Length: 86
Image 1 (cartoon, rainbow, N blue to C red):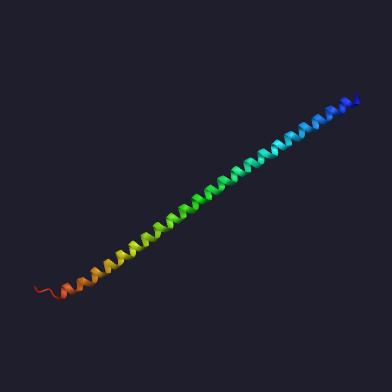
Image 2 (image 1 turned 30 degrees about the horizontal axis):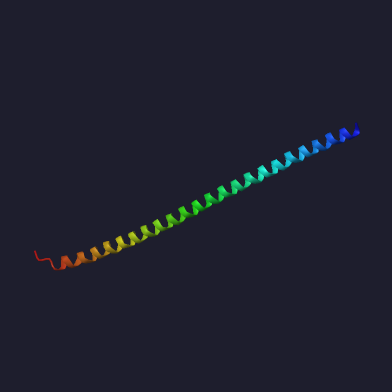
């Protein structure tokens, strides 16, 4: 009788340990998935920031080119009035 109780107790303990082990593995798997997802999001944000930086730099260069062209046109305008004969 005592041997049967000990066997049942050992089986119950083994089942509990199996459940705990399964929960630990599930939690580990979920944390790995979350870490991978977070890494992918961070990489995507980094790529987006780099692209935005490139677009900003191209825009700044275009603005500077437009400024130079505008300033050049204004400088040439004075010369036309000096040579104007009515």
